[in-house]
Amino acid sequence: ASRSGSCLSPPPAVPPRQPPGLAQQVLDWVLESPLYQLVLVPQARRTMVQTAESNGIGWDAAFQWIRGEGPWDDEVLQGVQGASGKTTQPDYYRKPFHAYESGNLNWEAAFEQELASRAVGARNFPLHGKDGEEAFRGAFDRALSSVGASVPSDGLVVDLGCGTGASTRRLAARFPRAARVLGIDMSPYFVAVGRRLLERAPGPAEPWVATVQSDPRVELHLGDAAHTQLPDACASVVSLFLVIHELPPDVTRSVCAEAFRILRPGGQLWISEMDFRAPAYAELRANALLFSLIRATEPYLDLYADSSEQLFQHLAADIGFQSVRIAAATGRHFALVATKHGSGSGSEGVIDDRRFDAEGNYAVEDTHLKTWESKSSDA
Figure 1 (cartoon, helix red, strand yellow):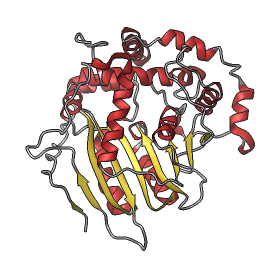
Figure 2 (figure 1 turned 90 degrees about the vertical axis):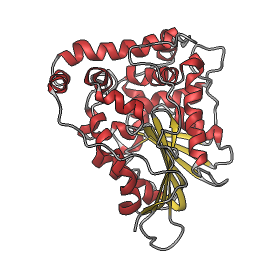
Figure 3 (figure 1 turned 30 degrees about the vertical axis):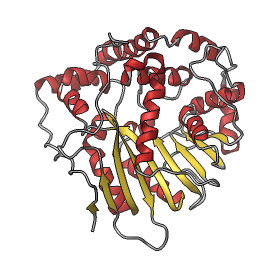
């Protein structure tokens, strides 16, 4: 039987979600109406750009630089698609995402992904300013290590939903003895831009928002995280960094099952994600108006918030991971390491949840900016 094993107290029970009130019903209607594109999406986008620029992150300069590293055309996309031919994305992937009407299937979204990532970091760790992303990603690194994340020296690391490869490159830098680090993403635009960044390897003197190290171990491929076409038991680690909140729950389950299939015995699935059990996100979600600014660009966020706690049990009881360990990474995010059994069929796994301390408080302080802020007054 499944059990929880931790020296800390169990997390507080999830309160039942209340039926939507009038304000929430009105906002739900707005998200399905033309007002979505006219009001909420532009506001969400302005918030990200303002956060970047006010924290010394040169959004416009970086955008112009990467756009000038083209050509960006159908021939480039065909080169990404290669011999497999044109990839058909499932319907869920074709919804508007992140203030882009065509979601991740356009050049602008690909040019701006790493710019937006820098802004997200600054919002989570505002006192770090333009270096907030390093603090943000470093918080996940430490949390993953605290629950046993490791990579063997001959290991294949697979980064699912890699985007333009920022997380893939970081994995390679963090684990220099890994044999190969493979990023897989469903957007040919993102893969094309990510490959160009690896080829170009911009340094600190150039206007890109990050220094990119060329690394022959790093590869970016076009593919579906739920159907990677990789061999069984080939990977030591599968990483999902801020991916599953962008998926419908049934797709998340398929992706995690695929991760289990391609992991070696003893291999690990790492999930770094938003945590709606964290008080800061729980309070934000209770405010229909403020939460709508996030929901406006994240079509599956409500579904994720309602289902994320069940995912832990699904990993242990249904998919078959031997252990599932969870820790708070920031005041709003968790890190999870699920380990595949070493031999035999295994039994229902152990869930070790360390997100809350012995008094029931979330284990990491929330440092995130308020929804309406773009820069800390103390920075």
